Amino acid sequence: MASVSTGGTLSITTSVAASADLPDGTIVSYSASANLFDASFSNSHSVSGSAKVAARKITISLKLPYFWKVVATGENMTVSMRLSANVSAPSGVSRSLSTNFSKTLATPANNATTSIAFSGSL
View 1 (cartoon, one colour):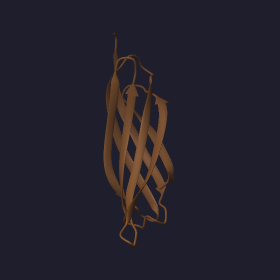
View 2 (spheres, helix red, strand yellow):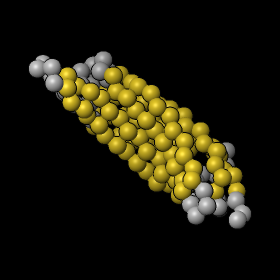
View 3 (cartoon, one colour):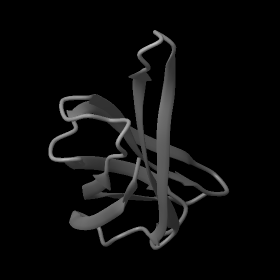
View 4 (cartoon, one colour):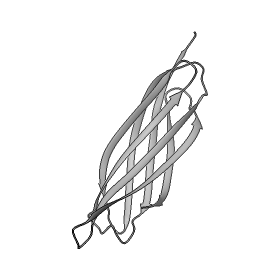
């Protein structure tokens, strides 16, 4: 089966309002991924890291490069972002907070840098 190679960079920014349960300085873990599955190929790339709550906000900016083999140009890719944080209560019991974001878009032109923005609350 014929194939083409496609690649570029996703420039992802995420701005999230932190709930009162997440005081300034709380560490928030994140992972961002891009996936494209077609009739012949499974493509995925991800990055992860952490950020701190500051002024009741979580702000993340990252670059996610990808280089894939696909059946045809312009196929849809899915870009996802997950944020999570552990919160300790005065009683010593902890709980986890998390949120997920996702967008589907046509694979950008080869070697393009594509901006993607997510916003919400945690």
